[in-house]
Image 1: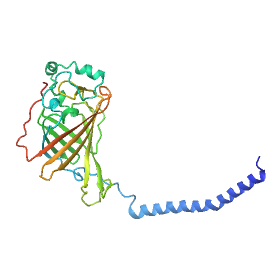
Image 2: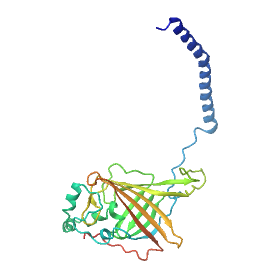
Image 3: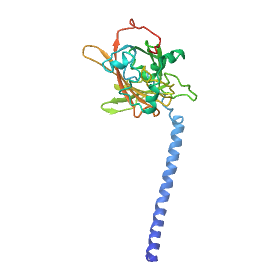
Image 4: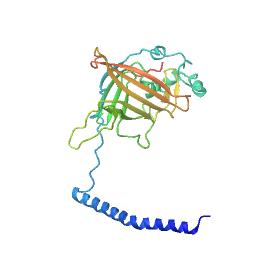
Length: 283
């Protein structure tokens, strides 16, 4: 047991410490309040928040223009309609395989569902041409001539409440990997000055609110629970050719045992002279 004198002595020490420091703390708090009040009076209140970043103005890459698919892999699944039951390389679970084995293109045609394999999770794998353009400063548009599909990539946005599922879903876009001097940075805005273009970066797109469709034309399914994650990047070769690479990650807890990852390549064309919109095909 500790002596009472020792406890009493410690209490006195703490009491003396509080009496010495409390006045200083009160003075410091009062000074902070007065300083903040004077600053607001002098400068007219707190500075206004920075305006939203303009995605078009700070785009680290220019994806606009016409692009054509260059199929260098998975030819048998992309250039022709695969046989029924050919779902090799896709991590389907038993429920997904069972549904794929019931594929009937005649039923899809009769139901007007020919576009199920042109939905966002499969569209970049379809041999096609892309036309990419800005609708406004916050919306990038991707059109395909195969299937005559349109995707809208929304910056500074999120899916609205009550958004209805569709084959292209609702896509939220953002510039990622913005760098300067080897360090990651956020785009900055100087009031009254143009917003700087980031020297590096890529486009990330997250798509939800998808209507069930096909990952391949032969009925390999994806469900309404699917989330599509994509990364768009571009580079140029010494001969002047410009390439667009779209990496897609399909996450479907209903029909896939793991994410389905693909990478699709597109070569830039000088213009739209070869643009040839065509309807969806079920076979």
